[in-house]
Length: 93
Image (tube, rainbow, N blue to C red; front, side, top):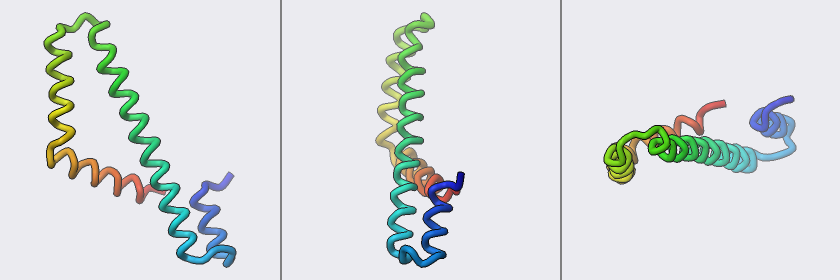
């Protein structure tokens, strides 16, 4: 079965939709894919952080990791990395 992107490009090639509609649809698909990827990553990270106490790792390590993740999320470097990954994921077929 052809991918959604291939179907959109085929509709554009056949003249059923114009370029603006094709771009809008491709952007929507890219946004959905990025959202699903980030949501999956967040769920995996949350599950990993949640499992730390079950593995009997010291509570201070768990608290430190949580604090580090919160401080990293607001850093300029993290925001630049997130922007790069969002653009990269948007370019994938």
